[in-house]
Amino acid sequence: MPDWDPETFTRNLIDDMRAHDGVPTSGPFAGRKVLILNTKGARTGEPRSAVLAYRQDGERWSIAASKGGAPVHPAWFYNLAAHPDDVTIEVNNQILPVRPLIEIAGPERDRLWEAHVAEMPGFGDYPKKTERVIPMVALERGD
View 1 (cartoon, one colour):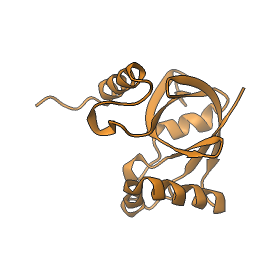
View 2 (cartoon, rainbow, N blue to C red):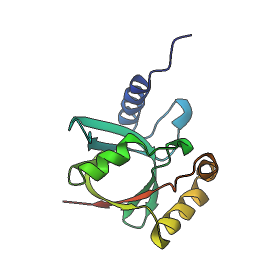
View 3 (cartoon, rainbow, N blue to C red):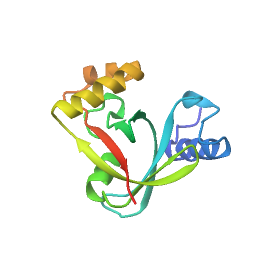
View 4 (cartoon, rainbow, N blue to C red):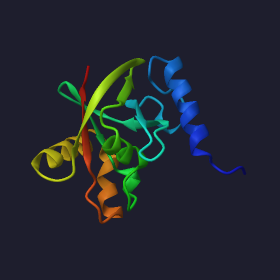
């Protein structure tokens, strides 16, 4: 059995989404509400893309830096912090510039997290797997 290659998986997922109006049609993300987050690498400055579950929060998109409950933040979180002025998302095959608002603690983080878990209950198990508080990121449309 070949080893799992996350870069190939992500590339194939993005290709599938782009071919089907932004909605994945196969694999574990089939039919789920996901977006493509495009950033610059925190250390390299190279283009990076991640596919993430999101929740609409008014005019914003809300994403969780959960990494499945891992003890460290996902790479894309560090990319946002390092290069917040160079971020786009692809939603329903539309590319939009966004500005990330990182919520690490406090009432707004808690509100975003609770709404995220209410809409996607699988996220509720992640805090049990880690000692870190999972940050939430609100993505506001930028111009």
